[in-house]
Length: 109
Image (cartoon, rainbow, N blue to C red; front, side, top):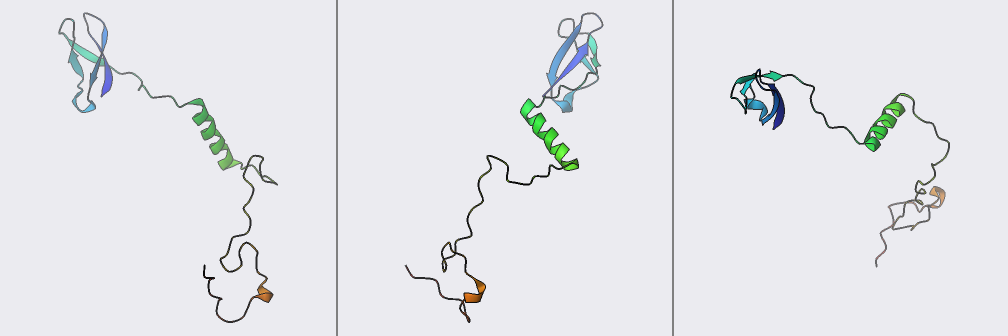
């Protein structure tokens, strides 16, 4: 439901909460029942929190002029070690010393 402001010619302004589909250009005054005209006002938009506003500003700025870094930023997690393999474990295999032919079968536990 939206809140609309109406102005009564005899009384004063008043607010009415009605669905957007049923609002009309006039509404009866709750005090004197006279037809009141609608007052056009700016929409009541919710404000964004300061943190969200800053994050959006940083994202917009980085789209135009990205920040170039030469190292991993402080506080970022360290890169993980090489990928673990069931045949070699965590140690990488030199391609020159890899056995020829079909791949070795997985170890049985």
